Image 1: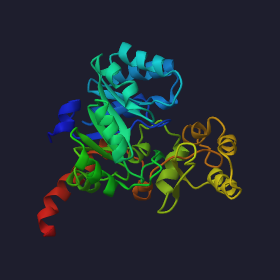
Image 2 (image 1 turned 120 degrees about the vertical axis):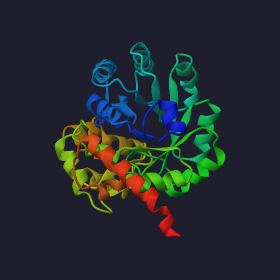
Image 3 (image 1 turned 180 degrees about the vertical axis):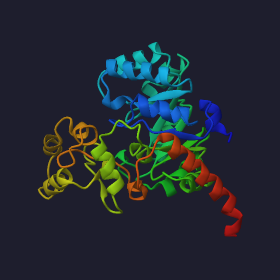
Image 4 (image 1 turned 90 degrees about the vertical axis):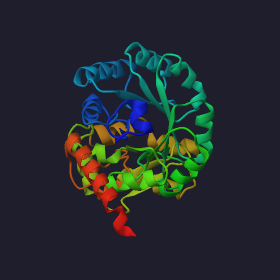
Length: 314
């Protein structure tokens, strides 16, 4: 399976394992890369020296390409970028910020840069900034998302219509048939997050993994748009947020309720009551926790089967 994405990253399959906070440590990233896809470390939940440690362990665990996802709204960004360069990482996914800030700096140091967006407008800005590829992420996705609630089904063809560089689809993708569907809509590859949360190698707490497996249709909701939109499993913390909204809260009120470390408490420490439980709508189709290698094999098998069945639809 060779196309613009497999060639860009030198991988076997055009699939990226998303770099998710508190889920994407070296075990997940290396297992993903060893399975023929691109593994990403999630730098957003790592102090600089912790990131260095994960990069070094990932290099020992795989000889395949892997990258780092860097949300640009976090502090210590210069130190993080310096570590990425020092450790010889060749692929960086940036998000939550202006792609012009770091793209040229990284590329001058031999690094391939991909930027994550949630709209046509920001996809074009990323292309103008010179990125090598774009991830267009629909409203269905977990974690921090766009405010416009544009679904993957509509976002991908709209971005494809305007973009010249490689396009990676994200949001609501966990199966081979969904992968094929987005590629028919114009994507060159896919980024998958939630399915890999429920993997044996994910650094998420086992209680959070089970919450993902138990989630049904309607159990997640995009909220906190005034801060950074995030899709959450509905739990006691989510209910507290909704109760606060009834009082027409200020941004400071919302920040006070959110506090610090809420995502770590939920996803990494397994507090299903007070924690922030970020996951995509596709969690309703995730029914078990499996090794990454098995997840990837299943997705590719489903993709090939769906592709073979296409002529029978007409």
